[in-house]
Length: 101
Image 1: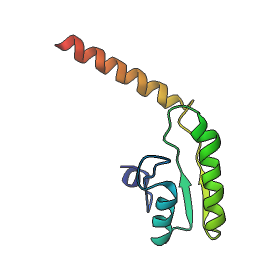
Image 2 (image 1 turned 180 degrees about the vertical axis):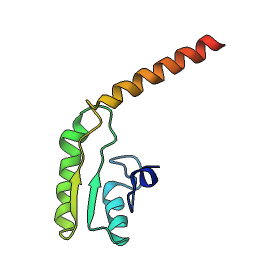
Image 3 (image 1 turned 90 degrees about the vertical axis):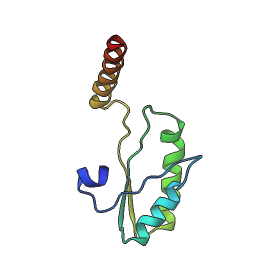
Image 4 (image 1 turned 135 degrees about the vertical axis):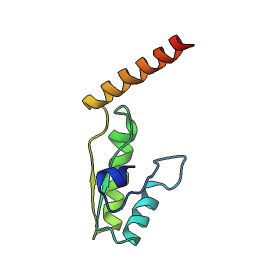
């Protein structure tokens, strides 16, 4: 959906822990497919240790090992106005479904 709707040539999902591929694996896959620029879009709802400590360290290491690839990190979802609207919408959907029963 992100690839199609965003018009991106290549989209790879990745996990920071307890999932595959990890970010290093996703970057390797993207580079193997010809990527010279990678944009990491953190899919976290709140700003926590992963975003403040883990992700910057991982990206720093990946940048060192992939010197010909530009790796950028997009801002997190935390604080984005659309997130509040989505949460409100989901809550209203749940209430409507409950009332319909």
